[in-house]
Structure formats: C-alpha cells, structure tokens
Amino acid sequence: MTPISESTVRRLSHYYRVLQEVEAEGKRLISSHRLAEREGITSAQVRKDLSYFGSFGRRGLGYNVRHLRERIRDILGLDRRWRVALVGAGNIGAALLAYRGFARQGFDVVAVFDRDPARVGQRLGELLIRDVSELAKTAGELRIELGVIATPVRAAQEVADLLVAAGVGGILNFAPRKLFVPPHVALRNVDMSVELESLSFSIAQMGVGRRRRAR
Amino acid sequence: MTPISESTVRRLSHYYRVLQEVEAEGKRLISSHRLAEREGITSAQVRKDLSYFGSFGRRGLGYNVRHLRERIRDILGLDRRWRVALVGAGNIGAALLAYRGFARQGFDVVAVFDRDPARVGQRLGELLIRDVSELAKTAGELRIELGVIATPVRAAQEVADLLVAAGVGGILNFAPRKLFVPPHVALRNVDMSVELESLSFSIAQMGVGRRRRAR
DNA sequence: TGTTGTGAAGGCGTTCACAGCC
DNA sequence: GGCTGTGAACGCCTTCACAACA
Image (cartoon, rainbow over all chains, first blue to last red; front, side):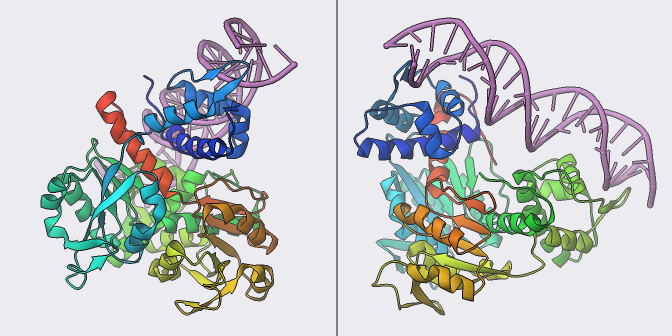
C-alpha cells in the first residue's frame, strides 16, 4: 500500500463527518463532487484519497453513503474505542474532559494525572486526579493507548517521555512546544498560539501586499 | 514579495517562541542549525523561511537573537495587541478565556457572546456574556478584529457569517466543520476530532504496514 | 449522460549544495 | 573554519484529463 499522507488522513476525517450528516439526512448515494463541495476541495482530490484504500464507488452512480462511511470508519480505526489518559488538570484539561465530542467519537478518557499536590486526590468530572508519578503503573493497569498533554510548556517533554515509557501508541499535545518522541509513537499537536499568530500575520499583511491562505 | 506559504508562517511562530526562550537564557547569537534542531527541522529550512523576509543573519556568525526575535514579531503582526471576540461560552470558550497564554501573546478577549438565554447576562471571567444578536453592534463599538468560534457545530457557519458581517479580519474556528468565508477574511481551524482520528489511524495502521508521519 | 479510478502533468514546498562573506 | 543566502534539484501532493463503466 502506498504510504498515506497526513493530509489525506485529515481529509478522511472530514469525509467521515460529512458522510455521517448525509446519512442522517437519509441520502443513499453521494458523488465525489458533492462530497468535495461540502469540504471546499476538488472532486479529484476526494477520489484520489479514497483510491489509496480501494474502489468504493460505482462509475456513473457515486458512492453508497453508508458503505463508504463504514469503510472510512474502519480505515481510521474508529471501529473500536480508545483508552485515553489526560495529563494536566488545568483549564484546558478540564475543558477537554467536559467536552462531549471526545467520547462521542470513541475516545474514552479513563485516567487524569497532574503534578500539583493541591489537585491530586481531587475529582475532575467523574475521575480521580492521580499523581503523575503513578502514570507508568496506572497506564499499565488501565491499558492506556493514547495520551493527551494539557500541561504547561515546561512539563510537556517530560510528560511525553513518561507517556512513551508507559507504552502509549500516540500523543495529542496541547502544549506550545515541539516534542520529541520515538518513531513508533504517533504525535499530533494542537497549538492555539500558532493559529492565532498565523491569523495575525494574515491580517497584518493584508494591508501590505495582496495574499491570502486558507486551510 | 513572494507569496508566503502557510507552513512558513507557522514555523515563524515556532522560531519566535524559541528565540524568546534563547533570549531569556541570555544568548546573543544563534545559528540556523541550532534554531533548527530545537524545532526538529533542517537548517536550510530555517534560512529559507527567513530569507523570504530579508537577510537577518551575518555569514560566519549566525543571527542576533534579539534582533531576529523583534523582526519576526513585526512580521507576525505581534508588535501590537489584537481585540478578540469569543463566541460560545461553553466548556471550550471558558477554557480559552481562562487561558493566560492568549493575553500573553497579545490577544485580548474583549467580548463574549452566546445564544443561550440562560448564559446571556451571566459573567464569564470578567466579561459579561452578551447575546449573539448584539454581535454586529458590539463588534463595531469595541472595534473587534478577530473572532473565535467555540460554539456547537450547527451554529458555526451562522456565527462565522455574523462575524464577517461585523467586519472581523480573521476567525479562529474550534467547531469541527469546514466554514466558508470571503477571501478577505482569514480563517484558521483547530479541530481536535481530526487530530484524534489521525492518531487513531496511525496507531491502527502501525500493526498493518510500516508507515508513520509526524508534524 | 454521469461518475469513478488513475496515470500523467503540474505546482509547491523542502532539501541540496555552494558561492559569498565573516 | 564557520555560517548565511539562494538558485537548482528533488519529491510530494494536487489537479488534469480521459478510459472504463453504469
């Protein structure tokens, strides 16, 4: 199988969401063109993305909505639930835990860690906040597969190391810093500062030249 | 000036942060090589990115840390403060407002809006939650420049339209949906579902083939 | 006629590699 | 010797365009 690009995978997520909506609307078939326009991309891109994984459509007709959704679900590994550890019980951590979409997409936060003695032992939602020193032990017991880092910057790399040592397969990092993890661990970053600064750049430049970018 | 790629701008944000740290450490000079290794990229990439905006270094020596930081600050439009409206006073909105890094980087949330009558009139942090119907009026009075969408998916496009009508120059969208805005409005998205699903994909696939991606 | 699947072409961003300067 | 700035080469991702098929 051709190595799949990061951007293709991200679009797959978008297709998946559109297909869920379209299915809820009761539509049975959808063309690459209609899928594309809901995402603001080209139909060729949609077909190319899907073609990396197989031939899911029928020429002249389009794609069966339900079938395609199920195939993408399987490809993305969403045909199962994932056990997640949240590290950092501050603002962001609390918001993530309270966020329903998490569980809805199949990601169950089963443990929360913090370093602050004032927080350890308290509850966050339904979960007990544990000390980070227990991470390795607890992660093993609870069979943690994913880690979410919602700590201050200075602790992020250290927490990443702990998560890696605890055997997680992937890390979602909210701390605004580049993290280094071994190649067998997947890493994704959500960095609001970068997004804001990128917006700032676009607006500040608009007066100057004549350029623009979207995503 | 060459049109600047989105990825270059994002790296600029990273350089800026590294330079802040390095400056705090008291270093006066830094080479593209050292800047690069802190970000996990190549030194050629650093030099190329910077070269789009001018020649900031000295051959044989490297870059003056403070000078380079100030230049990047100006390029990113961070030599001023930005007035931000937050729409959506739920979990995510509240976390964003409580998040210090926002203001620290020059982004001041000066108004909060929601649609829910139970929330309107309440306070979130130091701010009064206003009804979205007042968005246009208030945005004008408070000279809002940026909008942050932290609403449920179904309201996102409508809120985007309101923000555009209110004259914002850019929107940061946390709702997991593609938004359509006119070309003169900058748009950035933070989509946790996509990141999680992308992690899920990477891990699920790891057993299968032998591939990997980072950012 | 409508739409997919895909090789080929094109475009864009990254990396190379080296001249130029300290 | 060290390091920047940059044209050229490279490689990857997107778009084109059309054969294949309903």
